[in-house]
Image 1 (cartoon, rainbow, N blue to C red):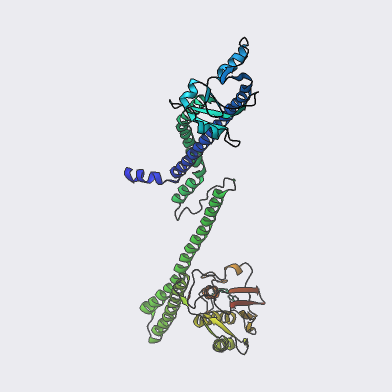
Image 2 (tube, rainbow, N blue to C red):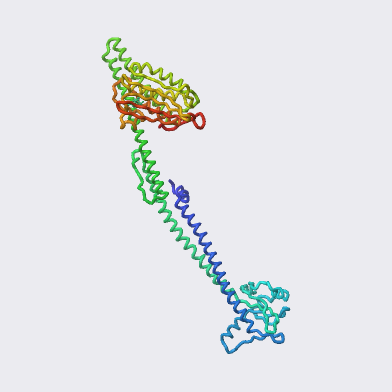
Length: 488
Ligand code: ADP
């Protein structure tokens, strides 16, 4: 991968994306916190100013006297506390009579703009607001407390006093500046923390990717150790390990299958070669040639039967074989098949009986169903010694059909039962009998049952007999053409 490709890929990496997402969230969060805190601070400071102004406004009445239309500040000049209070009071104030004639005014208040008589009359109404904020000529905000003052002579006056909010605003501005100056540092630290945290969180994923890259056909036993955190990543590791187990077993099956196929094909090929050598080097009479050719022919037939079955199975398992289920009576084909097996059954001195209902309608692919039935009945006849019996039964429970083939034959040992549906599996692989099977019949049975959404159940006792029960649903859900992947 070139350096440009790497650089292009870099921002797409999950770790980078997560870190940036974390950074964006964190900066949004910090900004919000900053603004909320600034608002709370501003409100608190304003509330404090209001409290002080309210107190001063209440106290002002005691210091004000109006004589002959003139304002006189009345206080003990020798008391430094009172002098200080008065100094503060007179810093920002306006006093007018009820008509709006100015009786007293500070220079600072003048810079805020003197209220007109109309404004004053409005401000003296009972529900007029007491608080306002005004800006001086040089832009400094002031909080103003205004209202009606009643003197001892019971006359109404208008008094407004104020305090600068300049200090408050400066504090707020300082806070905002410092906060947002320090923010990049916080963000840098959070980015670092995000980078480390995501790196830590994604480590198992990277381990997983590394392990997956190292896996080859020869190293399917690789597993990723569990971290014991019981979290989503542990579940991923667990799922991966289980997938590896399945892969390992599938690979083992495939290897076994290749070995079996080559073995199965080699046997008839070796036999044909032997027969041909006999014909070439030792046969002299036409009978001897003929016999060698007949034997070769039998082996060629076996070879082509194996190849045909294998081809069909692989088509079935890869989904190329399409089922064409149609509603039909299963009794008629079963009668024919049982009929076909009567001759081998008689040859083997067996009783072959069929117990079928008058009619049994089910949706099946007739070719595959007949293959299934022929394999099971054929096996029963093949593996039951003379004197025994084979019973074929078909029943209908309303939603399913049960097809049963029971024999009184040699039975299948418990240890072999789990494998009888595997390809090429034979309980007695070296059985010298001429009708020795290919070990593929039951693989077909299992696949056909599964393809019809059915099951195969087997019960067997060595020396007593075997019963196969195939259960098929009477109707196939979905469309009539069904493709099936994988065998049962
Ligand atoms: P095969 O072509 O050898 O019959 P199958 O796949 O049909 O192959 O069967 C697999 C093996 O299961 C057979 O080799 C046989 O050992 C055993 N088997 C199948 N059906 C019966 C049965 N009815 N009685 C006893 N053994 C059976």
